Image (cartoon, rainbow, N blue to C red; front, side, top):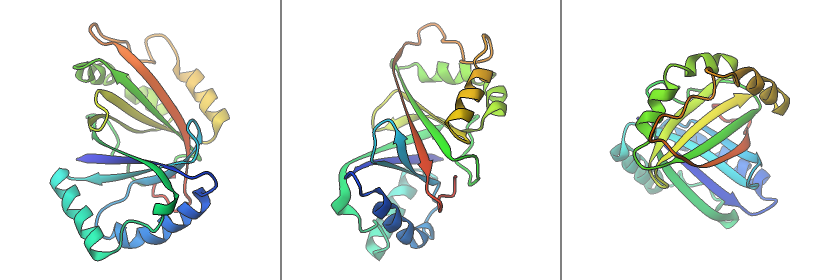
Length: 206
């Protein structure tokens, strides 16, 4: 399975209208393939929306997207508000939840780490024995790596009730030997980014 993560930068002040238009168009589009979730950013780069689509593979993605356009059910009529668009294809780690629908909290943290080429398999092995205990403290929503778009990225998404809950649970998790995972030899962490995003009321993940 692959996941397409699409991030759009919208005009300031347009997010409420964009959520309305996207939400109105979604039921028809969701008949063609599963929709994972929709968020708007609150901390980090503002006026962004993030929406995630699972597919079996790239062939299924291409077929469904073509059918959505051909039938006229997609995209939502919000082009006038879009300033920038970014898409990346993510492969889940073996231990990653598959963005299943659920209610986990009002705040989602999207963390993106960029590593040196060839490091991702070692990152997965370092995470594997520790992630279950870390997820028991706060839900891991997804962990995986980029395959199309910016490469050598490790994307992990965590859910919290609010920012205070996030600070409390991260403090619980940050213990030597428990979290964060050790960095194996030959693994260089080149860049770290994060943003906090709020799910729409109609998002399958919220």
